[in-house]
Length: 579
Image 1 (cartoon, rainbow, N blue to C red):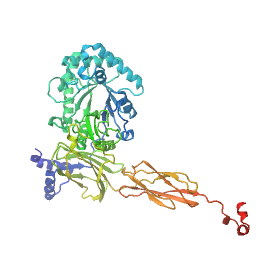
Image 2 (image 1 turned 180 degrees about the vertical axis):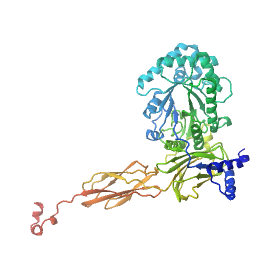
Image 3 (image 1 turned 90 degrees about the vertical axis):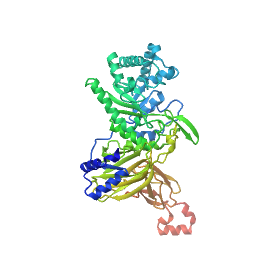
Image 4 (image 1 turned 90 degrees about the horizontal axis):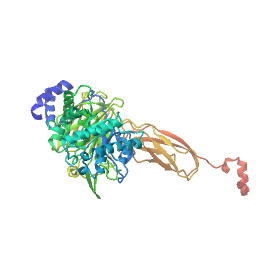
């Protein structure tokens, strides 16, 4: 269908971007469209990019600790959980909590297949109340944000009662929750698939209407799962349609004052959730759909070296880390970049292929443009041309860094394979390119399915800030002393330090911007020295010098005395021991 509307796309392009000014340029653009083009208006403003990212479960009593330094950089907003260890982790990172009531109840019965609350409603209600009290007491300063009544009631593993029993379950649970805490918020139905038009709970709206009509219950948030990736009706580009359909249905069937939040409390299917390109697609369309809360799904994964089959519900935080909880996987870097774009201005983007996605933002304070580009759904490799139009920050050239987070075929296995990527994205290029007629053109050759690119565009390569150096300023010769150097780079590039000790010099290894590095040195000759330090980023830009004066004091030597004392010492050597 896309090939048949090229003339219309051209007209829209000319109208909105005013970039094609000649017949020759129109012909060149038409060729580019056939090879896939992405058009970005750098002078547009679609509002501020806001995060709604989060996780499912995370840790239990047996799993290893999570690398919380790396986790903190992801700034998780939401967390769906039910185990205490997951709650402790989420609370430390100030995430909003969605507590899964059904999970605790089900496992108290031996698992979901054995969970039949209709057989003893009183016990079910008492169990809900007990757990609410326990978690309120344990996490007094960090209460639950939402209570999730039942997980995936449209899935035969999680629910095998009748539809009428399900409605009654929601009514009873809602009543207990609101009686205990009238200000508590309740979310549901958390179905596994959302296909508009299906009967009963699969259509969501029928369930909401029945719950309101029969029991007078209206949920505070409506939730469903987007665990797609391999079927055409669960592709991420359809998330905005599904969300809008639900909003329209709520408006049609309920009074105007009923405006519940929309939660996708699990997203990304099991055989694509480790794929970088698929992650970009889901992040893009969740943002486009204006979803209020979103949490990554978790699945079984494995590693071949050594063989390690586990659920990343409890090991590796939904694919962010290896099963050790410490070593980043590839999708960690995608989610980190998305987090770093928070608060920046979203740019208007046209993509000639709906399966090639880009999240584009600009930062007016640093004059930078950030791009997160991904492909999914196993398209054949393509050359992709990115046109950044109406660029006004700089007139002659810009500095462009292109990094790759590659896909791996094993990400489409069932289960997918965990692959470590501790050192971050692969640097492909880092160079200056021209700006012609306020347009920047970038080429991504042979863009493979599942790959993702991180692109940073800055007017020039700014040097790092002048570094700091801390350490002793007076000491003794032959003693090794430690000094700490720190600097910050505006582009967040890695940094190294050059230290001139006064009697020697050295370059340090590269470290992250803002982090500190400790270097040791000793002086063998008693003297006063000036330590000079400068920072250099990975692109070669260098800071100004910082200096620190250090003294290795001299002992009062005999030649510092008057000549007559020196002659006296030469004649009577014992005199040297007395002065």
